[in-house]
Length: 165
Figure 1 (cartoon, rainbow, N blue to C red):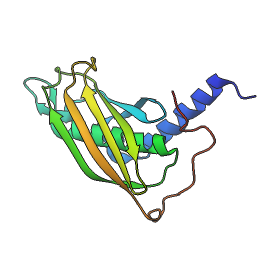
Figure 2 (cartoon, rainbow, N blue to C red):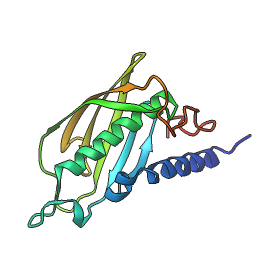
Figure 3 (spheres, one colour):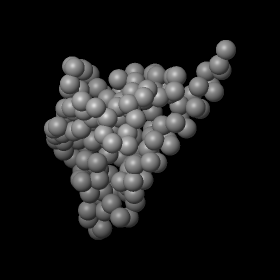
Figure 4 (cartoon, helix red, strand yellow):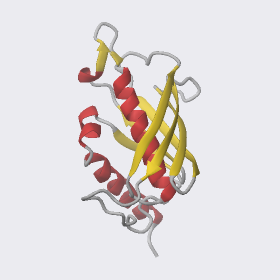
């Protein structure tokens, strides 16, 4: 029998290797935080190159958008329990307030509905308190008919994306 803590450790290593393999996520410092059966959380710590306003230390909205697109897309992976490619059709962020200066931003995406070709997601970005979000997110993703060249349609190793985490 596999020790549950060993499975958790293997999941975390698999997910972080996947995240490290996406250059723009690595450039922004976006890292895996947690996931469940239909949701995923990613974190983007403050970094000087992300500044929109150096006088106030606020992270640019484009970096937050990238974080949310990635969290939403990752929630589709965990909901489907496969790394099959999908494309962002529509992603909307409704900004509610500016992030706190020099804050780590957490992005949470939830894949709440799947059809044969479309995934529907919602989520939020916050800087420490999910009850006081920076932005609300809604989006749709389309599944590819076949894997893009160089991508595998294989499911991850047993339990790699299984939730909850």
